[in-house]
Amino acid sequence: MYEVIMPKLGITMESGRIEKWHKKEGDRVEKGEVLFDVMTDKVTIEVESYNSGLLKKILKAEGEEVPVTEVIAYIGEEDEKVPPHKSDQKTAERVTGMETKEAEKKISSTKEDVEISGDRVKISPLARKIAEEIGIDYRSGKIKGSGPGGRIVKEDVMAYSKQKEGNGKKEAESASAGITIKSSVRLEGKRKIIADRMSYSALNIPEIVLNVKANVTRLKALREELNEKILKTSGVRITYTDFLLKAASNAIRNNLELNSTFSDGNYIIYDDINIGLAVSSDGGLIVPTIFNCDRLKITDIAKKRIELINKAKEEKLNLEDISNGTFTVTNLGMYGIRSFSPIINPPQAAILAVGEIYTEPAVIDGKIRPESFMNLTVSCDHRIIDGTTGAKFLRELVEFIENPAGLID
Image 1 (tube, helix red, strand yellow):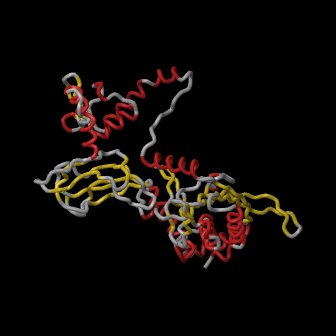
Image 2 (image 1 turned 90 degrees about the horizontal axis):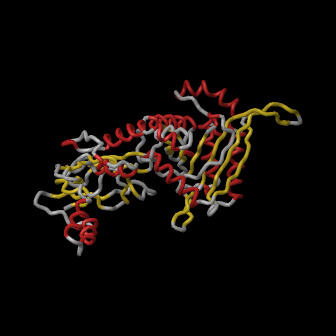
Image 3 (image 1 turned 180 degrees about the horizontal axis):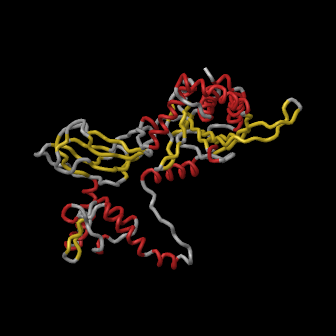
């Protein structure tokens, strides 16, 4: 008998959400065949079976969040018996000593099918979980099941929820004292992961936030001068983000203290500079990684950026694409945001925010003339990164940006 466990698919992964079982109990499973899908760190990963045999028992249903290394199923041969599981033992302990009727009632509540007044309500574990979370009584008989044998599935619960929301709109408006509710959606999947990670960062990481202004007049001129040439030779158009990624990775190389994490009381500094680029997608914010960014030419950075952004929008990023980042760059300049204070992306220790390019009068060589500027903000984990360390990084970053010819190699 083989145990199927929740795999640890990344160094920061503590649990995974089972999105879909590709096999049902009793099905034959071959080694290397996709057994289930798990969502972690904002991407869904197909998990293959390490063994061949019959899927004897599924312990964790679709939609459940499971800690890594916990047993979620058993694979074995037809004559093998599934060993007692902790959840089964706890259930048995709870009913020991209870009256027969009370015990039967307690046990029946753990069954997949719930019996009410002689009528059986068939509902999948995931559908039941969703119904309970959003406050829908699946025992009411108002939800019609579209699954096999009239079984209520996830889609039935969601459809009923939408119908109920529409029917109750007027009542909701009245109850909210004139406040009209556009929508109310429970956070799930990627949005929930984002919420959890940002909450963890805000509650557990004391940040120091540093700001600086860089003159990007030369950078603008260089980009305009080289872009057509680079487009012809490399097939890509260089953006300001590409310059910032290259400049940031170069500055980090000289200030590796920011290329770090604080883990289990240890201050860990990485030698590989893997820059995460915050990308907005339909499913929410996601941070794919450009590995060894300081060793790449700016044209290679541009190609990788384009590839990752396209994969993010198409929701085709894999676990490797979003793993092992050591520093993050987030750019909201294209939305007209001049400056902002970013939240650190754990387990990293620092993040750089990039604002829009704007023009204002400046005194250059004793003369007033219009110059272009960009505001940069770095948030650092103050447990391990001092203000002077962050300031040195920003000073060198500005130096690279204001003398951009060194970024082209």
